[in-house]
Length: 130
Image 1 (spheres, helix red, strand yellow):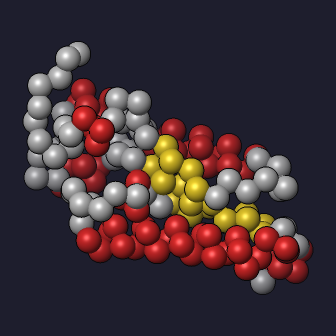
Image 2 (tube, rainbow, N blue to C red):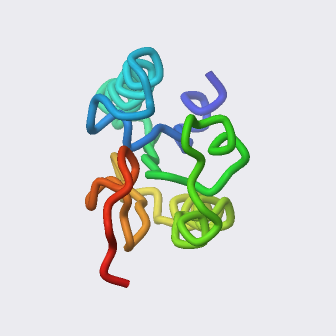
């Protein structure tokens, strides 16, 4: 209600690239929850844009965090170094916060350049041409 009263506000929802592609290591519940978060962000924009309220869904791909240790086949240190880092996500959120109020970045994808999902290495070991 504060945002509506001041006719300005920014909401940054950290979603996931799992909301874009079903399957893989993410699982059904996680994928469904992140997809719903993206839809909620869009609904906030539709219902509140006339009040200056903006919602962004930030969808990171693999981020090098401790949760990767819980995977059946944790990624190597080399693969983790190539992933999006926590600091990269923080810098992206700062960028989002600095965008002028008349601009709404509805959904932002942030993935590593060397993307294990693109080459299939996230689900199986394949030779790489490094």
